[in-house]
Image 1 (cartoon, rainbow, N blue to C red):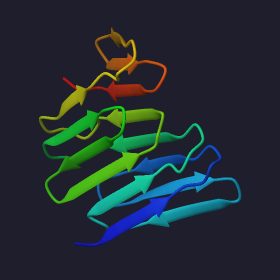
Image 2: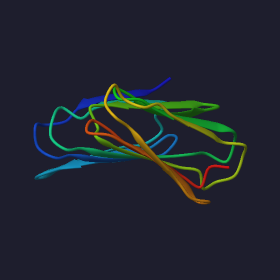
Image 3: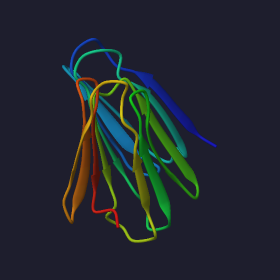
Length: 130
């Protein structure tokens, strides 16, 4: 399997990751990749944002205080060091999402289209999961 490993900067970084491709943007730099079955990103500091997208199959999205992960058949995308995490179920399949609270006081907000778990150390969002 092909793998991408990247550590961001102390500045605010943004990553957008699909099952086998993605990009990570920071001031004056954009890294993109294609045809990689595994992505391992480290935010490296700052107030970072990661958006993880599903495949057309059955996918799993999980977020804890230390890890954001979306995986399914043929891919596994993981991100650490990202304060904001967004998981998107947009391409069908029977997708699932789990948002774990932090060691701080947590707030869970739900609507028919998203769930959000927030605290002083995490902002985890699951969009369009059933």
